[in-house]
Length: 411
Image (cartoon, rainbow, N blue to C red):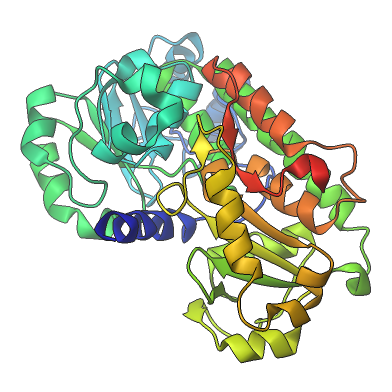
């Protein structure tokens, strides 16, 4: 139970950070003078306009972050473009300016499994010198990448001494825990190490976070491929769901891992999943994640039930081939007292979906949900095939796993 509770806390911490939208973004790197999504010669031209007085200064114009805007900033922009800069100043996920020595060669990521998986997907696993212990213990898809790396404790409370011994240039962390890590930041800074809170799993900032790290690692092309993958599948979901009339959106009971625990407005599980995937929450009158009255659920008669699960709750996720445990949990869910009365059970619309499919590719997870709610809209889309493509393209491994029940091919 202790392990399960800890995993739930970790999942809650990351899911609460998730929002939506794959739109144009501003690259939060100093030197992006014209405030678009890249640093190129247009920024040098724009910077010259600032110096000449024809353009207004922008937040990111001070490329070398020395408090002045002058010809040295143009020189820094040219160095960034050529990949020869000696340091790079970014805005982290909290909005702090952080100056990082370049090239970036030594990274500790304490951002659960999401951080290490992103570095591996960027092709920068050789830069990782330490990771959160959770990633080593619970990320089977990363076994071949992390097997020789030391664990440095938890995401919220890492082992500071272990980190200092590794002598990283940066410690990458979740934004969610930043306010709890003032002591960690102070200790690292005094040792010449930068704490960089930057979430890769938040769709509304995914493109900026991925491309920012792409610049830090000199992996801009790889970062763009990750962004393009996400945008492509999120666009498919958005384009199809927007054609739905309100009466075509099913009434959904969303269960957050535990029996009769639902996620209403104000929770990431609801706000960033159901509206985007074309579902209406039968508990849209509650706030956040709460336990509900089983009788009230039956009265509200959902047309679909979507239960989120995690690997510690039931044997599932990457590397799993035995569907027995997840099938058993689904049967237990369906056979609850009085559930034979609800339409979701009568019509076999009860789905278990693993949030392991979320990670730093929210589009994959959302495609599972969108397809189960609207199989007719997504009859040409196979979420498992999309996930297989992601694993092959970005981790170079085969897709083996159990992420949903029933199997999406039956939806």
